[in-house]
Length: 349
Image (tube, rainbow, N blue to C red):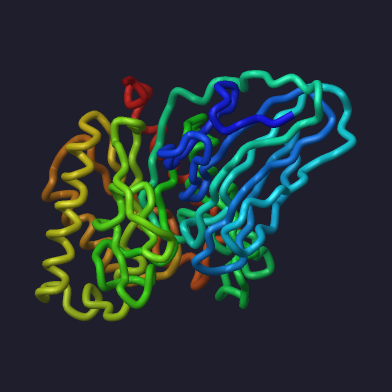
């Protein structure tokens, strides 16, 4: 029995391109679609659109995590997830492990004939959005032999958004997450590592649903579709490439321009989300402290009770490599505690 993407009993989360309701496109890390069924088998039909890395989707079936290695090419492919299940209630959450190094078109699930589809439990009423880079996506998070070390050579197989500090924080707070983060991205175009050689920055991508220049037409996002109570802005790590101007000359023209553009971005978010708490931060990945100094300066200039500068205990000094699972847990515990300290009323619509 085929379960089409427009089935009202499916549950979606994340910035998803529903321009074609029969072929929605999953773009961002931590985006998911959930199916609850009573039956004995389940499979999914997907088309993968690859820019880089070896691409994988993640899933939880009855609480047990698995992964699907995606085929290269644009064709629609049938992937078996489980067969021979007990004839009882099962819950499947199919989620995007990786950022927009690829996008995935979802064509639907297949369950055995006679299976029954049920409505999942409602999503949390609390809502969080994270604008960040690869750390916020959980890139290389599963490389557990490299805690506190440089990254191993890899092809994307260690990346898992489930273990990002962003999704961990949301789970600790019982909140829905839109993880609108992208590996390698900086604030401004022509800096960072994303979409080389014509690098794209957050200010060019944050208001898009599809934004990778190698993966088709750029599309605008409708901000009316999701309004977070808390916004985390974790940008300032990749901005030092190709020149770490904030470290070299804090009062230089490039550094001053960055602070001006960062403030402009935060004030734009304040306009888009007029009630949200906005938390400015970076991560424990090593970087020059002048980036955090710049963020603090902008926060003080904005001087609004909704805008906060948060620093981790090991901010900018925790590791030379990406954040592994235990380090993400450390970050999530600190960040969730800080958000909790802002009070219960921040979650009111």
